[in-house]
Image (cartoon, rainbow, N blue to C red; front, side, top):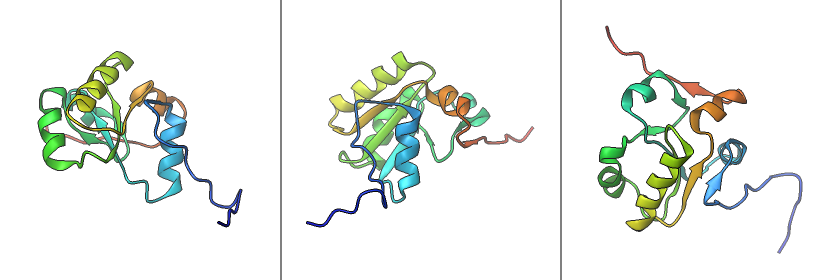
Length: 124
């Protein structure tokens, strides 16, 4: 097997808890095969969220995930707090998702280091 180090950095494998830098490395790698789930209230999601994140508020999360995301998918979860992220990640693990990572610090940590944020403008 031929290895070429330093040319194409391979992202680290998914961990149970990730830092924003870990997720950014996956996204920068290209073809990341992952889904970012924002489990906060939709109003907070609309105000600002990590670019590319899907809004899946807590009350509908498990049902929507099961109908739209394969159990083998790499999922990065963030809520309003790390505790909320951990709780939701555990719910997803309990229904069969085996690649779930809690994004530590959520959108606040993402913003703090200057990574891209999106917002949804609501009609007045």
